[in-house]
Image 1 (cartoon, helix red, strand yellow):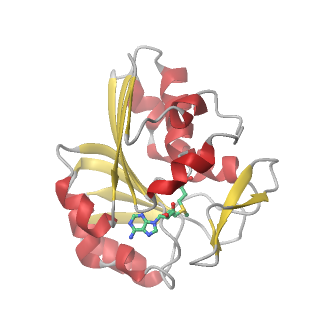
Image 2 (cartoon, helix red, strand yellow):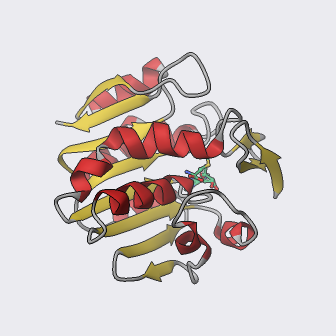
Image 3 (cartoon, protein in one colour):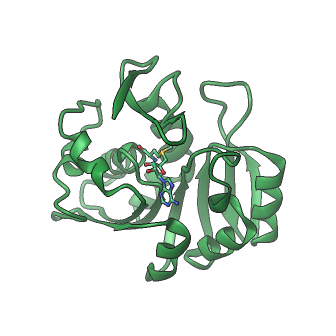
Amino acid sequence: MKKILTGDGSFTFLNEEFKEVYHSISGAEEEAVKKYAAPTNIFELAKKGRIRILDICFGMGYNSSAAIDIALNSNPECRIDIIGLEKDKSLLNSLKDLKPKFKNYDIIRNIKNDFYKDSNVDLRILFGDAVETIKKVEGLFDVCFLDPFSPRKLPSLWTQNFFKDISSKLKTGGVLATFSCATHVRINLVRAGFDVKDGPCIGRRAPSTIAVKL
Ligand SMILES: C[S@@+](CC[C@H](N)C(=O)[O-])C[C@H]1O[C@@H](n2cnc3c(N)ncnc32)[C@H](O)[C@@H]1O
């Protein structure tokens, strides 16, 4: 996997099959924090003592790692349940020598097979095509990170039907964050039962999208 240095000093990967990078070139860690973990209310949710996160396209685990840092900073007693959906099982082996600044990135490095558990965090990864694995996900979630490759390269993860499956896994008021603000993506989100608004602009002029399950 080819490592690419991004603008905030953190590394991302280049995916040769999709010819896309895993994060914004302006800053991989910054994107995980500002586009995903911060705008999904994790700091506030963690104060309630338990938070459930569905991390679609888990990748290098930056989004989950940023979320764990924010949740434990808010409430060191918080229980954080994460289900990650990811196609590439070989990816985890490539993470061992990465040193992003997330305080809890050891959790990601220490995932054994598809599982990590300690007194705060229960993290499981379902490997396979997310269009299929999402059907096996149990329980309802507070937050969803949706971070596939672009709609042009990976259209199957941006459809109305897939968004309906995501919606069925979220609590009412549950929040989804994604980097795309494409009109057809937002229309599909609305048709799947979400209210959509602009998320932060990180690394480009266009906003990301924050969608709230109605
Ligand atoms: C943009 S990267 C995700 C970066 C990640 N969220 C992070 O924080 O490091 C996209 C990820 O989607 C995965 N992927 C591609 N097609 C997929 C599919 N059909 N189902 C699940 N994951 C898929 C890739 O293997 C890659 O890890």
